[in-house]
Length: 126
Picture 1 (cartoon, rainbow, N blue to C red):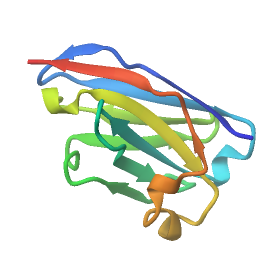
Picture 2 (picture 1 turned 90 degrees about the vertical axis):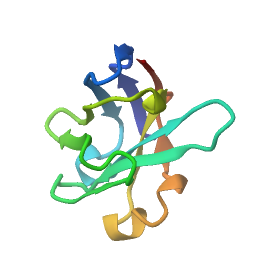
Picture 3 (picture 1 turned 135 degrees about the vertical axis):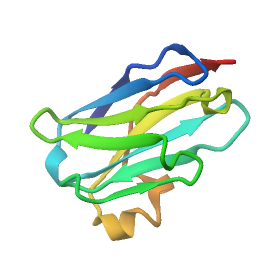
């Protein structure tokens, strides 16, 4: 069983930056694809970004491309989401997820990620 714990969410002003972290324990972190999602009340969970096991492959939602960057440190069992140019519409609970499937397969089915964290709140004020 893989446990994921997100951190770094807080209130930030529009135009600001924020870095989220997701620490993993259990399993073999360096072999898993990782991803970030977000969700606001009354809406479905939305894919944000994904990264393959090595960090050499990434995939972004169009809504965050060019503003957000996903990265990972396999030595620290941690995946990051650097968010720049934040806007009020980025306000959401942000979740990280892990999955053992090959990245090319996983990226087409990210909403069915194997393991999920509990989320961290990001609020962007206008």
